[in-house]
Image (tube, rainbow, N blue to C red):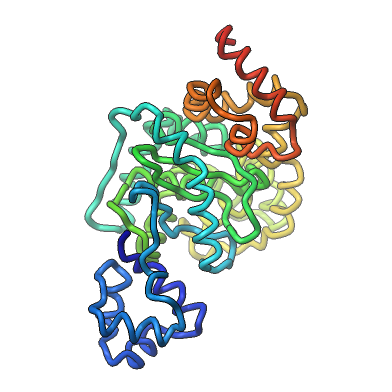
Length: 366
């Protein structure tokens, strides 16, 4: 049981206190409050006053994690959504549902960790190049969702597909459960929307900056920069730019839609990269991007495309082979209810049929 400073920052925001205002109310410096957020435990008198000011039991700041073996850092949200206590708690609850699965899973072995000192554009580009090498992509090839999943498998990161509760306003989030690095993915996410946040969470997982549990905007911005460079290599951005520059805006949009459709990425994403290459580039692609997304499915629709157990298992094995292997090793001893929970089947496919087909596929290695 340890001090969770991230809860202080979130609770202060929800109670309407800036950190400066909170510091003034507690008669401490802003730096002291920052230190608490980053993990320093307040002394007794400060803790009592802090709890009284925020109208919360002091025990709230000392959550009982499962042997300290679960962490869900506060990372990228969906759109303009704010991190809330409900979002934090429900994300951790999802992770807790897999404690026994991963507690008895074999360790992943040697796992890549990339660390840098300076969070600047140069280091972001270098890290992006290292990450792309794990995906074995051509220099001019942007990353689509299939390459993303292959990349995570190569990095020994486990993907779990879930139906997120409404409170968890994100397409994906990274969690560390025992010795395993896990990225949870919302089934309802369109594959074009999924690529960037999936890469963002991947970068968090391979940076592995200790038990970071507080939101750090500098870290988030750096991970955004790396994720963009991984998804869109500079040679591809330059190719797109040379194709559309100087053309009428309607022609530019048509070309961008063609590039995006052929390579499986959003129009919005490549537009953001073009702006970095040419700050004067200005094109409203909201409508075309929304129309393009209609041509692509959600990851859940892909998983459950045929609505039968055999196809679902084949799809799952293809997209997340590490998770498939871990479940396969334990499915004989798991209840139907627990397997349905692990797979977030709910009413999509009958869990009993999935378990029977899963056992058959494992026994015949097919």
